[in-house]
Amino acid sequence: MPSARIWRERNQRYLNEVAVCDTCGARHFPPRKRCDACGGSEFTIQPMAETGKLLTYTVIRTAPPGFANMVPYVVGVIEMDDGTRLMAQVADVEPEEVAMGMKVTLQFRKVRQEGRTGIIGYGHKVVPV
Image 1 (cartoon, rainbow, N blue to C red):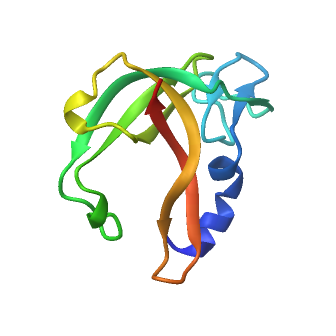
Image 2: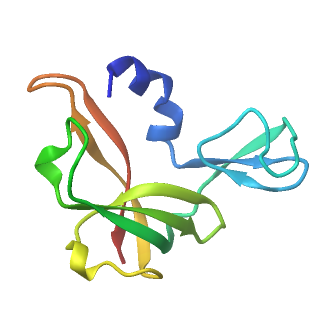
Protein backbone atom coordinates (compact mmCIF):
# COMPACT_ATOMS: atom_id res chain seq x y z
CA MET A 1 0.00 0.00 0.00
CA PRO A 2 1.45 3.40 -0.93
CA SER A 3 2.74 5.49 1.96
CA ALA A 4 0.38 8.36 1.02
CA ARG A 5 -2.61 6.09 1.68
CA ILE A 6 -1.12 4.95 4.99
CA TRP A 7 -0.81 8.60 6.01
CA ARG A 8 -4.41 9.45 4.96
CA GLU A 9 -5.79 6.46 6.85
CA ARG A 10 -3.56 6.84 9.92
CA ASN A 11 -6.38 7.47 12.43
CA GLN A 12 -8.40 4.39 11.47
CA ARG A 13 -5.26 2.24 11.17
CA TYR A 14 -3.39 3.37 14.28
CA LEU A 15 -6.15 4.17 16.77
CA ASN A 16 -8.56 1.74 18.36
CA GLU A 17 -11.55 4.07 17.92
CA VAL A 18 -15.06 3.84 16.51
CA ALA A 19 -17.42 6.60 15.32
CA VAL A 20 -20.83 6.41 17.00
CA CYS A 21 -23.73 8.20 15.29
CA ASP A 22 -25.17 10.88 17.57
CA THR A 23 -28.64 10.40 16.02
CA CYS A 24 -29.17 6.62 16.12
CA GLY A 25 -26.15 5.15 17.94
CA ALA A 26 -24.90 3.04 15.01
CA ARG A 27 -21.21 2.21 15.28
CA HIS A 28 -18.91 2.71 12.28
CA PHE A 29 -15.38 1.48 11.66
CA PRO A 30 -13.76 2.98 9.75
CA PRO A 31 -15.49 6.35 10.31
CA ARG A 32 -17.81 7.74 7.63
CA LYS A 33 -19.17 11.15 6.73
CA ARG A 34 -22.76 9.80 6.80
CA CYS A 35 -24.33 7.15 8.99
CA ASP A 36 -25.27 4.02 7.02
CA ALA A 37 -28.32 3.47 9.25
CA CYS A 38 -29.96 6.92 9.43
CA GLY A 39 -27.98 9.32 7.24
CA GLY A 40 -26.84 11.40 10.21
CA SER A 41 -23.64 13.40 9.95
CA GLU A 42 -22.67 13.98 13.59
CA PHE A 43 -20.49 11.38 15.32
CA THR A 44 -18.81 10.88 18.67
CA ILE A 45 -15.46 9.08 18.69
CA GLN A 46 -15.22 6.35 21.34
CA PRO A 47 -12.72 3.59 22.17
CA MET A 48 -13.54 0.28 20.46
CA ALA A 49 -13.87 -2.94 22.46
CA GLU A 50 -10.73 -5.06 22.41
CA THR A 51 -12.41 -8.47 22.24
CA GLY A 52 -15.04 -9.99 20.00
CA LYS A 53 -16.01 -13.04 17.98
CA LEU A 54 -15.34 -14.18 14.43
CA LEU A 55 -18.55 -14.05 12.37
CA THR A 56 -17.20 -15.42 9.08
CA TYR A 57 -13.85 -15.89 7.38
CA THR A 58 -11.99 -16.97 4.28
CA VAL A 59 -8.57 -18.51 3.75
CA ILE A 60 -6.41 -16.60 1.26
CA ARG A 61 -4.28 -19.00 -0.76
CA THR A 62 -3.51 -16.75 -3.75
CA ALA A 63 -2.45 -13.41 -2.33
CA PRO A 64 -2.37 -9.95 -3.89
CA PRO A 65 1.03 -8.33 -4.56
CA GLY A 66 3.00 -7.74 -1.38
CA PHE A 67 1.34 -10.52 0.63
CA ALA A 68 2.55 -13.65 -1.19
CA ASN A 69 4.97 -14.53 1.62
CA MET A 70 2.04 -14.85 4.05
CA VAL A 71 -0.12 -17.46 2.29
CA PRO A 72 -2.14 -19.20 3.43
CA TYR A 73 -3.66 -16.62 5.77
CA VAL A 74 -7.11 -15.97 7.18
CA VAL A 75 -9.19 -12.79 6.83
CA GLY A 76 -12.44 -12.51 8.71
CA VAL A 77 -15.35 -10.31 9.73
CA ILE A 78 -15.26 -9.72 13.46
CA GLU A 79 -18.02 -8.41 15.72
CA MET A 80 -16.45 -6.71 18.70
CA ASP A 81 -18.14 -7.00 22.10
CA ASP A 82 -19.46 -3.43 21.71
CA GLY A 83 -21.21 -4.32 18.41
CA THR A 84 -18.64 -2.76 16.07
CA ARG A 85 -17.88 -4.87 13.01
CA LEU A 86 -14.60 -4.86 11.13
CA MET A 87 -12.55 -6.95 8.74
CA ALA A 88 -9.10 -8.08 9.84
CA GLN A 89 -6.51 -10.78 9.42
CA VAL A 90 -6.75 -13.63 11.92
CA ALA A 91 -3.17 -14.20 13.09
CA ASP A 92 -1.31 -16.73 15.25
CA VAL A 93 -3.54 -19.64 14.28
CA GLU A 94 -3.43 -22.24 11.51
CA PRO A 95 -6.24 -21.91 8.94
CA GLU A 96 -7.54 -25.39 9.85
CA GLU A 97 -8.02 -24.30 13.49
CA VAL A 98 -10.15 -21.22 12.71
CA ALA A 99 -13.88 -21.48 13.43
CA MET A 100 -16.84 -19.14 13.23
CA GLY A 101 -17.78 -17.90 16.67
CA MET A 102 -14.25 -18.16 18.06
CA LYS A 103 -13.34 -15.46 20.59
CA VAL A 104 -10.62 -13.08 19.44
CA THR A 105 -8.77 -10.05 20.73
CA LEU A 106 -7.76 -7.02 18.68
CA GLN A 107 -4.06 -6.27 18.35
CA PHE A 108 -2.01 -3.59 16.63
CA ARG A 109 0.62 -5.23 14.40
CA LYS A 110 2.84 -4.83 11.37
CA VAL A 111 0.84 -5.46 8.20
CA ARG A 112 3.49 -4.93 5.53
CA GLN A 113 6.55 -2.96 4.49
CA GLU A 114 7.21 -0.95 1.32
CA GLY A 115 10.30 -2.56 -0.18
CA ARG A 116 13.21 -3.87 1.85
CA THR A 117 13.89 -0.57 3.61
CA GLY A 118 10.57 1.22 3.11
CA ILE A 119 7.80 2.51 5.30
CA ILE A 120 6.26 -0.07 7.61
CA GLY A 121 2.45 -0.19 7.57
CA TYR A 122 0.70 -1.17 10.78
CA GLY A 123 -2.92 -2.04 11.37
CA HIS A 124 -5.40 -4.18 13.24
CA LYS A 125 -5.21 -7.95 13.39
CA VAL A 126 -7.07 -10.35 15.66
CA VAL A 127 -5.75 -13.38 17.51
CA PRO A 128 -7.61 -16.17 19.33
CA VAL A 129 -8.21 -15.59 23.03
